[in-house]
Length: 69
Image 1 (cartoon, one colour):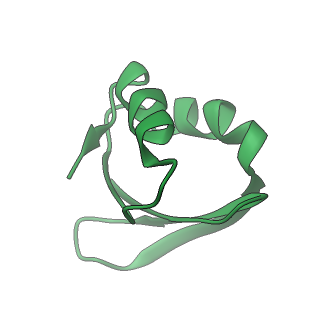
Image 2: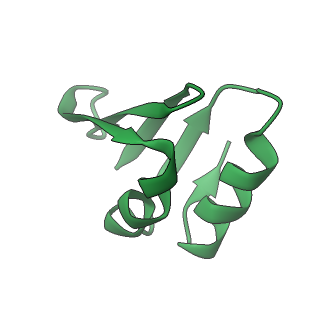
Image 3: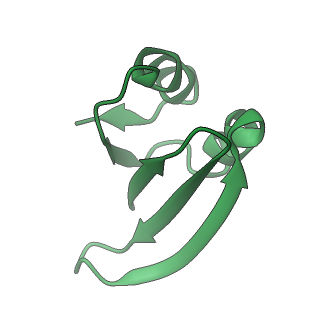
């Protein structure tokens, strides 16, 4: 699975894609709940936009064994 994360100040939009690049799930979560959402996608690869707070999100994804690319 691959996940794409669009980061906003108060929420993040997550799209989960299969190996063919088809969206299989889309969720919008409050940024404070991103840790919980990341645990659901452990072992996936993630792409996220570079923002001023991406370091925290990168660390959260890494703790859940999500490879950032």
